[in-house]
Amino acid sequence: MNLHHLLGRARNDTRDSHRAAVVNAPADTQSFESLTAKEREIWERAIAYYQKDVSPMDAIFDRDLIDITNALAAAGDASSLAGVAIPAPMRTVLEDAAPVFRKVWWERHSRSSRARTEELQALLARYGRPISEMLTKAYRQTWPPEGLTVQVCAYANWAGAYSTSGRLIVMASTYDGIAASDGLEIVFHEAMHQWDDAMIPRLRDTAQRLHADIPRDLFHSLIFYTAGYATSRVVPGHRPYADPLWARGLPGHAQLDEYWLPYLRGEGTLAAALDRLVGSFAK
Image (cartoon, rainbow, N blue to C red; front, side, top):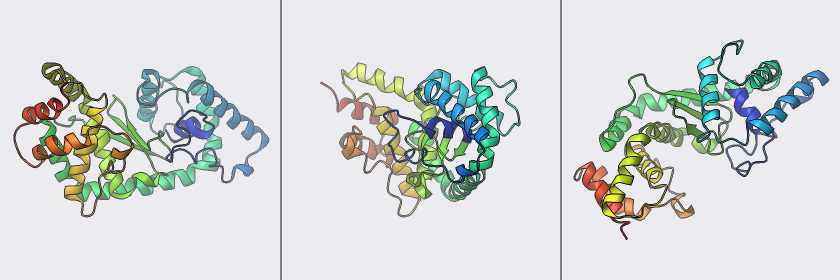
């Protein structure tokens, strides 16, 4: 997974390549000079493959890439990718590049990922249960009985974290924007996306019934707001992750303050809160 995500960002000219969570990946070449000419050739070939066939895909919305990422996550630290459901050319690229990756990047990337994992585990142990209880109560949902898998890699996507339909969450360890309690909030934020299949149709059905024209990303604003509220209620001094995002175009802040916040504080029912929230966008 670490190698997969690094190659996806090592030479990436997509529109999101300058975002803070991934902008430093191309310059992450410490000890690169130790590689032999043959090893450099292998590495360049791997980057070229990813640049052409993988990097242009979207880690969240492209079904083929989602399947690949879930398959690699399930493979863990296996020494071979034989039998793993990924394209044959990718299997060759990853297995050829793995020794090069281990020589230059693995030790420090692994160290960074261990540190971030330990930080998140400590925060979850201290604060996770009350946050979890607030979120499940607010959405009237439960977590999958088999749990969710969080893979911590040096790099993830442009946002520093994302989730897939396979109950997989990927988080970056080199991005300080999701360190400490911000990372704790983002773990729950990404976990809440597992409820999208329940919440998005409910928002759309409510909007249709009330003749409301809701923002396309209202479901995402709802997650940002709810996860941020729960974390700030439990973790002293925590500032919700979305606080600076509302001014950048994340929709619905005023409506959430007026119609969703009272529900989070214990007033009324989920159905009534959604009616009020969605109804505020009525034509």
